[in-house]
Image (cartoon, rainbow, N blue to C red; front, side):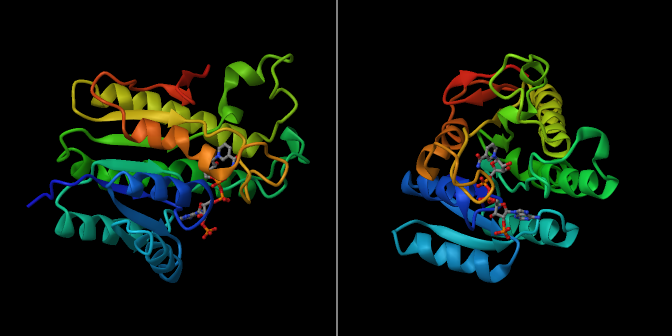
Length: 245
Ligand SMILES: NC(=O)c1ccc[n+]([C@@H]2O[C@H](COP(=O)([O-])OP(=O)(O)OC[C@H]3O[C@@H](n4cnc5c(N)ncnc54)[C@H](OP(=O)(O)O)[C@@H]3O)[C@@H](O)[C@H]2O)c1
């Protein structure tokens, strides 16, 4: 039988924005399932949250691995009977940062970045959609980036115009396309799907140069996880405001 308390799964929750998102959702009384590539990381993360009074459970979930995805979904089905919130947070930067020229982008780089930032989001969501459909108000939050905005990249005067890395940026543009397509498919259901830009956040991915502290960087994910029936669906949001696609 499905439990009454809300249940959230956060991928890549062992550090950075994912950890903080799990913490903030847990502090609101939500059961948080913290996914991490390694079981030891997942268990340590859950223990850290439990020590703060949060109902947390660690799940081994390398989002690129089909066996992890299906085992995680089976566990959630058996234990909770539903999933209320899926935060597709796990993501990787391009290994060559902003140094690469678009025309030099190697195939293996594109494949690696798309594997985590797009294909795995599609696969994780496919696996958990039946459980999200059992929730009275399923919410899917895809961690995108303002660097995925084609509108802003096409404008030479935009603040991101010079921050171009084709592999990372296009993986997030494609993720945004997934948000729009899935939200359309699910319109008329209780599920809402949105893309979140967390801001430029001081994590390993965001680097020391980023202006935002991690607790602020988790706010958009948390807000979108908790929107009500009148909230946005199929939108690209940062701090409550819409971004151009
Ligand atoms: N920080 C920013 O300024 C910024 C800006 C825009 C968008 N974002 C997006 O926000 C999300 C979180 O970024 P972050 O800054 O918190 O990054 P981060 O500190 O580098 O953390 C990334 C997390 O994703 C996990 N991860 C990577 N590949 C994975 C896989 N195959 N399976 C499961 N987990 C995996 C990492 O696990 P390991 O510890 O095992 O590596 C880690 O927990 C990403 O999608 C990123 O693109 C960040």
